[in-house]
Image (tube, rainbow, N blue to C red; front, side):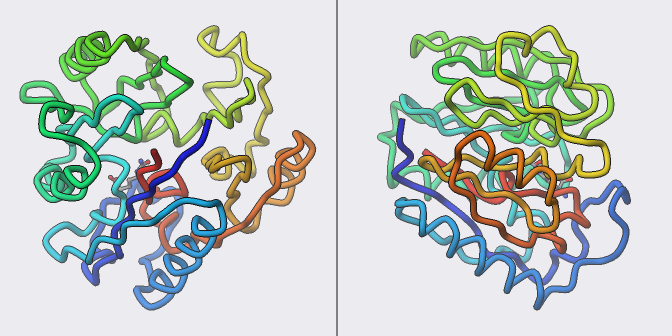
Length: 257
Ligand code: CIR
């Protein structure tokens, strides 16, 4: 398996007004966020992917989190319908970038009353786990299931209790390896994987990303870093402290395909 492309969007100044649960207090420092985003792009570029960098979009404070308005699979691209009202319009702005890679008949849409955000979707080969959350509803999941089936792919729902998005707490690293934290540690859905448990005090680092045999780990989580290295992966670290203040992590900031 290999990813060839990545899409990111530069953070906008309005980032400081992004949605936050307050779990990680403080307002993002914009200049610092820009530098961290530069480092994020550098790390990705070391993983052998080409990177499309979209310009900042001041209308949408959370638009740096491009993972949410689209879900890109090997067979089709799905424009989602973000459940957060202040983010819903982001779906119109990601389409052009997606069109560079997919013909019109391979671009699908989640439509109202269905809502879905990409952060709730975790790809494991041709199977997709989707979190039912405050952002992703039953109808959104139904539509996603139908779209995926059209392309020979499958989907199963995971109920979320504590986290914002599914991938806030569980991430697949390929090779049957999965990072699990909190409510996901004992979920029967993930029994068949080689699970690595993330300690509670490093829960944020459950959101690592696999990019072509390298795993990018957020900076400042030594236990998780060691565990990922012990699984045999090359690792890179990126400081995401300013995005963490908005509940955003490594996976949220790119579309990888
Ligand atoms: C939000 O609440 O929508 C943003 N502040 C964070 C989005 C994080 N995205 C993700 O987990 N995929």
